[in-house]
Structure formats: C-alpha cells, structure tokens
Image 1: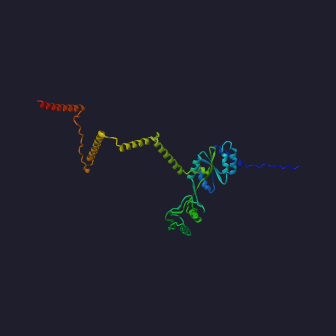
Image 2: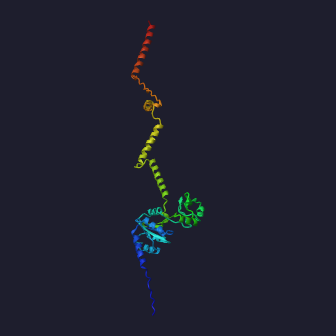
Image 3: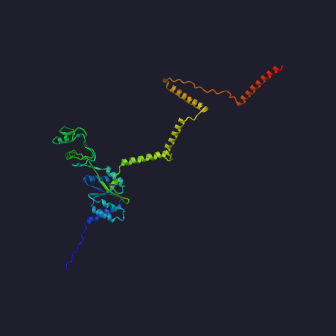
Length: 340
C-alpha cells in the first residue's frame, strides 16, 4: 500500500528568532511606529540611526514577521493589532518610550541631506553659493549659463560670482541641474523617516493625526490665553495672574471718573484751587532755581482773606432789636410834641 508522507515545511531558525526579537521589543516599549524608508539610502539611514541613538530602537524587518509578532502579543497590548493595516511597502519599525508626537517633531527637525536625483521635488529653495567651484572650464560652462548662474574663470577654475537661486521649493529638479549640483557637492534634498502610524496607550494614530502645525497650535494657545485673560479682567476674577491687572484697571477707571466728573463745590472747591495754585508755585520755584535761563518769576500766592470775626445770629438779632427800639422812641417823641 502506497502511503503519502506529508512533511511539514520547516521554518528557518532566523525567522523564529526575528519574531521573538520583535515580540520582545513590542512588549518593552510604550510606543511603536511604522515608518517608510522608500527613497532613503543606507548612508542617510545610518545618520538617522545615529541621531536617534539612546532615544529609540530602529529595526528593519519583514512585514510578515511583524504581523506574526503583533498577533502573538495582542492579548498583552490592547489595540496593537491596528498596526497590521499599515504593514505595506518598505518599512522600518521604531520602538521607543517617547511620546509619538515628540518623536514625529524630532524626526521632522532632524532630516538628513542627500544628493539630488532627476525628477526630485525640491524640499526647500536650492541656492548655488558664490565661490570657487574647483571645476575647470569646459562644456559645463553651458550648464551654468542655462540655469543663469553667473560665473567667471579665475586661476583655471570656475568661480560663481553670487548666490543664485536655481530651484524653488516644490519644483522638480531637471536632470542637467541634478548632475551639476552633484558635481558641486551640493546635497539639497532633506530626507527623514515618514511615520505612517504609531501605537501608544492602546490606540493607533494615523499619519494625519500625528501631523501638527506647531505655529498654528501656538497661535491657538495664545488666542485662548488672551480671551481667558480678557474675560477674567471683565469679571474681576481674583487670581495670581489677574489681580495686578484688575487692580490697575480699577485704579485707572476710578482716576478717570474723578477727573471727568466735578464733585467739589463751594468752599472745598475754593481751597482745592488754592492748593493747586500753591503746588504750581512750588514747582515754578524749583524750576526757577534749577533753570534760571527759563526766566521764570514767582509771585507769592494770594492768601484768602478770612474775617476776624464772623457775626453770629445772636448779634444780628440784638442789632435788629436796638433799631426797632430807636424807631419806637422817635414815634413817642412825635406824639408828645403834638399834645404839648
């Protein structure tokens, strides 16, 4: 009887070890990122590794092996299976305890340069700097002329006469210009790891969610702070940050009110004016002594005349009584003369 012998396909030991290593890295780190390495050369990748040394572990591995590792530890890392949807194309895996937003900002700020390739889109304005290129004159002169780079020959070398913008940010780099930039040793393209997704705290964040406009974010915070401060001042909310401003505002408003609303009348107003006159005279005296060239002459202020004795109501009544008595006596004398 013929018997079919089915032999199980043996898994290479290096794959088993790789999955084990990936599982260990997944469990040891709080943040796991999948980043694209398309268009990044080995020298640029080495430089990126160097910049991240001590901050993160970078591992280039097969997507299939990472998929297996994720599934095997899914019960220990809630929500991590969401990374599987992003396991496409050429990737590098980043394991770190950094906040994924902090990592994204760090990578964006630490991109590394590489030589230009025909058809590359300029990541920033490309300028050919003034100076000696070290290149001998020859057919290359026509390339300088084509891209309107002013040059002259000096001691057998081509010298660029001034800094020249040859490609604006967002424009494609022509083949001839890419060759010229490479010959000049200019590496104008900035490359870095492009994070496609990141796992942290039980959630997978997409590339769009990780992209922050820091200037816009800063502007929003400043506007929110200003609005909160205006509200606090309007309602006189007592807080450490607002009390100095609230007190200053109250003082200014009170001073403005006292200045524009006349509340002094009668005797108080007269003496307030005299006091102001006295202060003005004192100031004039100081100016006259400190700056005689101004020709200021100071006259003694007039003092208010205060009556020596203010007649009381009683004395006024006594005068009225005496006047009435005198009038009565005059009438009596007139009657007496009539009757002999």
